[in-house]
Amino acid sequence: MSSMPEPVPASVFIVGPASWNRIVVLDRLPEPVPHMQFAEDTWETVGGTSAGKALGLTALGRTTLLHALAGTDAEGNRVREALQAAGVQTHWGDGLTERHLNLMTREGGRVSLYLSTPEATEGEQDAWVRDAMSAADAVVLDLAAEPLRLLPLARSTGTPIWVDVHDYDGTADFHRPFLDAAHTVFCNADQLDDPVAFLRSRIAAGASLAVCTLGADGAVAVDEHGAVHRVRAEPVEVVDTNGAGDAFLVGVLDARLDGVGVTAALEAGARSAASVLRTRHLHPLLDPILGTAGE
Image (cartoon, rainbow, N blue to C red; front, side, top):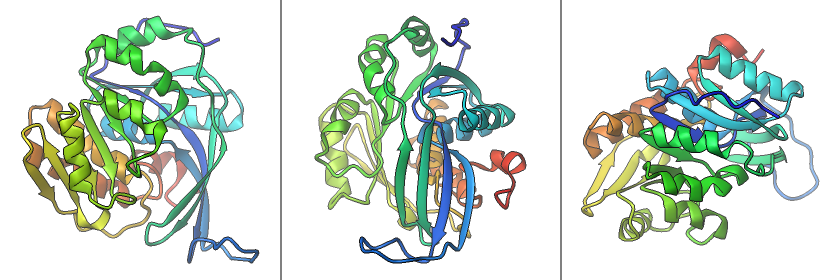
């Protein structure tokens, strides 16, 4: 059982995945037929949408605390050690270490194979988590079993909740509790026919801001008054797209906590995303730790 120290005061409290990933770059994503392909590149690195957000906020100077689950196996220790070396404040709960195999193309196509994922805990640390959430300016709950279990607790604190539903298709049941709890919603346009209509639906449901990233086309947002805001993507030579969406969210979150308007916050998000697109890791903070060539 992990110890439960006094909560570290943090402006943003994040709950969700931190994983150990193997990235495999292919010239095309595999078709569902027996065949052979050769990898163009491969490396191992820290993964997990919550780890990416914690790294980004740490780099921006925002006090952040990541609550994640991981084992004490080799992969779990690598994740813990890398995030500690990057300066991320973490609190670890006991659980299976999450591991992914990500098949990627240079253009950003991806298939993520989840090799192992932790189940929700039984709430042994909920008092500690409640105090940390209550003290924060914002809580980020990512798509995983433990954050799902903690949604009611997070709502009870009154702290604004930010959620990232990634490639939500508009119908999947697992995402609904996150959407219903969210003050601010992020998603991407991969499976949405009409992103602006979806964003408007979230504002109508009670969110104060809804944002959809559009890849190379930038991002679009709808604010609490129904106004639509758009921003272009920052020009950048893309090395790897993993973590770009997380970096966009943290740029917006950091700016909004500073009182910045929506359009300017989206521009901050675009700059943050561009910084991540230049590295093969979730964030450049990991480059001196894990190596720029994936050593």
